[in-house]
Image (cartoon, rainbow, N blue to C red):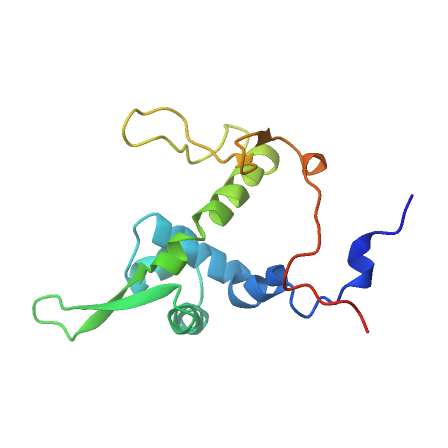
Length: 158
């Protein structure tokens, strides 16, 4: 077997590592799950995720600081002003990541009765899922169908 080209390149600019530094933690993914399910308020997120208040507060603050979520003020009658957390465009772009985790979980970690959530197309009701395709439209069914190559940001190891 030949030596992988990746061994000749520095990982300092790895975008997988950069992404994980922002979202690569259990509570963050659970917050994102809830945001994609339309849950916007702190107390609802805490109840649904089971995260300790301080942990949830920290994760929400980080996602806001990174531009993944945005705070929107609201006020219930007779209550103090509060904030809802809504996905930004940057946050919405994480949807395929969440759906990939869901699909993997449905295949390998679902309860005996089957997956707890089904995704359907809002317009027609058909089952929805992710597909990886090349720019010419060929559907790729495996990592074996992909060849990684150094990109314009790749730097050789000194």
